[in-house]
Length: 126
Image (tube, rainbow, N blue to C red; front, side, top):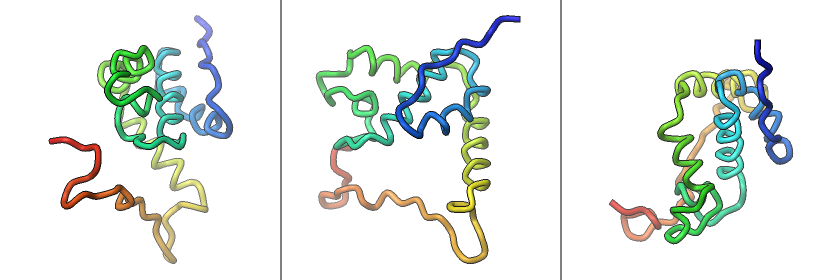
């Protein structure tokens, strides 16, 4: 049996979280992709919802940046089970008493903080 290659650690406390998903990804590149994706979501960036900004590149000129291409491959072409990842995410949320559902309240995840211009969200094209 071959030894599983470990992914480089994610920054700070996000490594503890990311490591809980490692068994759902068969290749080290996928485990690295998850860590880069989580870092892109959590780092303070002007627009962390676009592929280039998730990878830390310039919105227009950075589309060919290697980090952007890796993120694109991880999210759209790499073979892993998104339902299993989502189920693990929900299991972890439910197990944490700080954010788990309980009779006294709920956790609301809301994106209404996005800047709006008229009826459109900034930086979103149709």
